[in-house]
Length: 75
Image 1 (cartoon, rainbow, N blue to C red):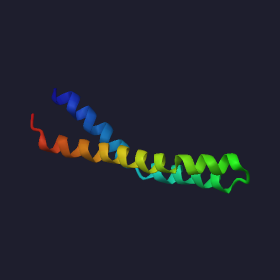
Image 2: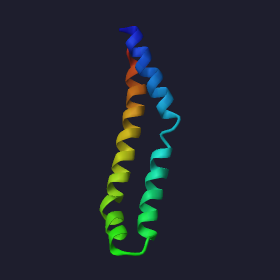
Image 3: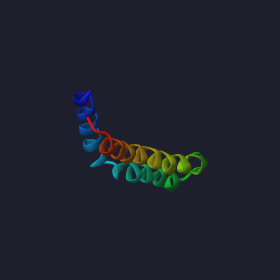
């Protein structure tokens, strides 16, 4: 079990270094969709900006929650 937990912690540690890229990429996609003339891009941006924020919070929360839980567990 300790080997499995260490593997999961290593994965979380590796991913957490790049978690800041999620809102940047999402913001760029929404910004590009909003900047492209036409109703399709604007409607896409209006429809999906909440998903970018929610997805960022979900992924970042899972990463930090995983680190916290692993720190509290002892093997």
